[in-house]
Length: 77
Image (cartoon, rainbow, N blue to C red; front, side, top):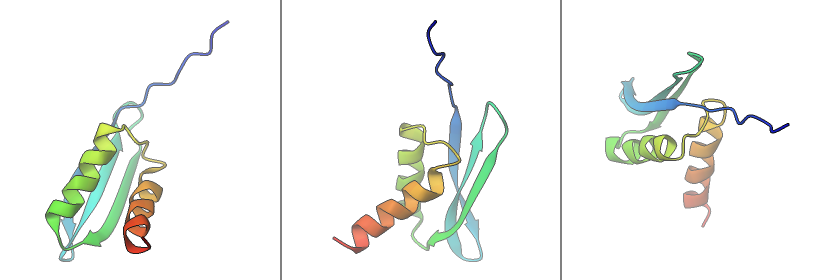
């Protein structure tokens, strides 16, 4: 018997809150959501993060960890 792979279908978009851009994500199959506030004042940088999350279909459960890993990777090179 083959294991059936769970298909996820997340969608991420840039949102503005309190003068900083963040990312809102929704898992379209379950309705689960994630909101990552205050990432940056630079909308282009945050848009690149959202594009990456969408491209690689990162689950809403792991999105925050992926974003902060990328930020730390940049800061601590």
